Length: 542
Ligand SMILES: Nc1nc2c(c(=O)[nH]1)N[C@H]1C(S)=C(S)[C@@H](COP(=O)(O)O)O[C@H]1N2
Ligand SMILES: [Mo]
View (cartoon, helix red, strand yellow):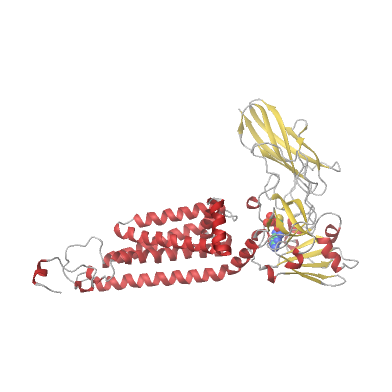
């Protein structure tokens, strides 16, 4: 190897172990590879920290899943079909693996960039975090806290990347300093870098494993949900009548999409139920206890009904209300199998997480279509809306009827049993109060003088709405155009054009139900049994 002429050659390549004792020579791999490894470890730990955050908040806000969803939505249908053909049910796993590979490559690249030039790798990590943030906030069904996970992922990645690359640069400067005097820092710096790299990698694996364990139930439940098909209803749903929808910009859509549907529950983490393990029991004051499993329930003759459900905590003018098409089996048929005993007047429904609601037995046995529901707007119930089975009862606030993740119906008496909210200052009965809301214009808006179009929704579930009126500055009531309802169990759109000259106005709305009873003007707070009063907005014309 050593020839006389080699004396005049430049020294051995610094990557080779033969390079002797110079600082760079100790690096057996080219430092670029160590930088890539640092990027991978930092990115892995960052993503794991983000997923762990998401898993703790709610498994529904995972940045990786959100990005995957965004990719699914973005690819043309042809590519989607191809992916399903190629990979079948494994298509989602392939997608997640692909996202993992892309993330890995980007992380390695961030390491190399950061090693070359301080700040560049951080910038790349920041960009990736911004992509995750965009995916999460545009998709998550879980509100603004969803933004936390990608932010945590980006910050952890950047901090670790900076710390690792700083150590690497001390050991193997990317721009080698002229020969230094004194003690060679290499062995110490080398150990410091390798320890940090190992620590980061271990942390990434531990956080990833914990997240996997935490979210496994959710993964199983969403996997089942994604691959199941809902049964067809035995009788088709009522068609939405022509004239049920008014063409007015900004009015609430007649049917609320699942992703926009309000969510209210006490569950810190969304319960994840594996349908094959699910059972619904009917117990208490019954002739015979009944227990049905998911397959048995799906085989029952189902009906599909639009029902507007509302939260008792919905303030006048609030948005804790939504209208969906629910697929389910009438509760009265399930109760008939069990045979409620004389004297019973309540059904205490229990959720998988222990939450309970008290529903009058009558509301579950009369002719209204109270449902043991499995479908929402043509899909299996979303996890956060009660997958796999919930109750839907037309005419009652959710807190006394709409039990999600339903597992038991106990036939009992109001005198003997108490539901979750009853000892907490809320009523044990909760019929929905007749209400109306102005959606457009938004309160506080300035609008053009002339004919100003007002519009919104009104509801009196199971009684139906017969009239909606507006008044300006407490003047006479003027009747609005009322759209045809889908049924008395849903809300109705309404609209009215008012000629207004420049100035400040107070506009109020009131609805009247089909029994001729107008909603009350007397204000009531949400507790104990629902808000009352007129929705009042201010409009500036000018
Ligand atoms: N298990 C369970 N079910 C529940 C609740 C709850 O806290 N836990 N909240 C109820 C309340 S107060 C309302 S208003 C409705 C809301 O249903 P949604 O989240 O599907 O809109 O669910 C009801 N079902
Ligand atoms: Mo509620």
